Amino acid sequence: MDVATQALALVLLVVVGAGCREETQAEPLKSLKPEPLPSLAVPGEAAPDAPRPASPSEGEVAGPIQGEPLPASALRVALAGERVRVGEETFEPARPDDAARLAQRVKGHTVLVVPDADTFLVQTSELFTVLRDSAESVWLAHPDGPVAYPVVLRDEAGFRAWLEEVAPGKLRIIMRADGFELTTSVGKLPGPDPNGPSVPVRAGRQDIVTLRRGLGLLKGRFKTSEDICLVPSFGTEVAQAARALGGNFTAPGEPLFDILCFVYPTPHKAPDGG
Image (cartoon, rainbow, N blue to C red; front, side, top):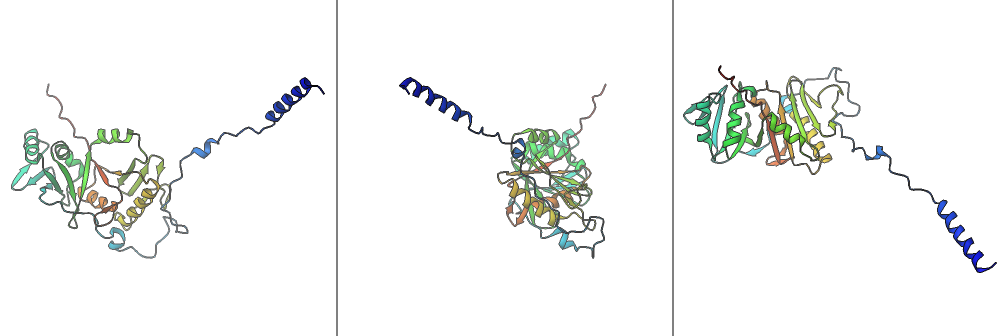
């Protein structure tokens, strides 16, 4: 065999060998799906409508009161329906003149909002707008213990803008009459009833103990997420919303998420006179 023939045979061998190589398969799209969320459903637990042996005690549902120490030297704003009290002064933030006076009173201050038992979130929209725009920082006091929670106030538009930010998690506590729905950018944290909230009410009370456990599961899943938003229904008492914020703490001064966002209703503009 001459040199030219040998060279041709070698080229053919290389080409055939290359054609026999297996092509690398592209990774199937299903492998790119996000990791599934953990679940609050306990294996072997009875169905939600099955009778339970006994009603849980208040301690089993509420758990220990956890939070941050009350902020020193904070300006206290006590709620009383659509009015608020700061020291000896009373304001009705829905009135433009009172809102302007209150803005001057709280400007540059750390403010501690102290809820009563009967003020609903829908009554506080003008107040929280003033505090968001004028106060240095805002804390919400727990109604049952000497702790409080620093909050970032967002109205409905601010909340929507936050949701549109590109960031992992976007964790929300949707506070409903029947419990807490823990929602993320990849779906809802499953609870004992797939058709119900993640954390149903127990014995007619909000289950802060299980809420805390659910938030711990979310922290384990979204390790880099630093903030979480509490979104109460606007017919919720502010005191109840404050209690829910305690679910973010595993011990005094030890939050699961560093930034607590609190969503309040956007104030309704008065109709123009004509």
